[in-house]
Image (tube, rainbow, N blue to C red):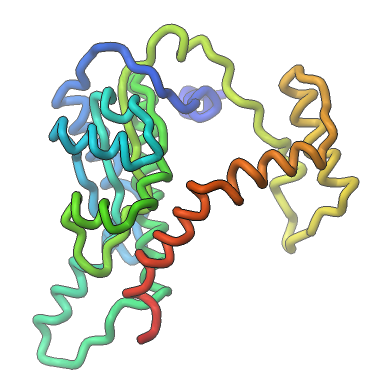
Length: 248
């Protein structure tokens, strides 16, 4: 594998950082790499918030599911799906302007997340770890006020960056599902009970772990990730974030 592929295979989420700054040069490289990401129509339907205020980082550590490591991260970036900038420009035209809709929202989300991943890959190449924080979607009222977000913007992802401590560098990356369960040729194929069990069993074996009752595994995933308080709050807030993009 070449170095780029190796970096992609090796990258894992980092939540404990060395007490070491990210230099201005490194931050500039990461941000410039993000801006070089593919973007629909070359329109850059996203914005990036560089959170440097320690008080704001502390607040985000609390509002994003009480995760103290967010406040300790040397660099915190929030990637906004942003239709506001172009909409403001369109309103300067002497014509009736259609408000951004769900199609524009999905393009904005894609643009923002592609830029975020460019930043993550660039950071990895510099030896800087990162962790995506999806909880920025929660607590819409607080985050909208804290970040002064206007209509037609949405904080689709936050990423924290820092140099990983040795324990984090040594920690084994979680084993992914095998390609055969993820890649479909031409058309989508639903999985029956046997195939779902096979997917989870092979993941466990690949990780060197004992296989478990796969329905119990599914129940745990459902309880922790889909039916938990934070998941219900994320659904509530996400709908609120999207309301301005929905037909009036």
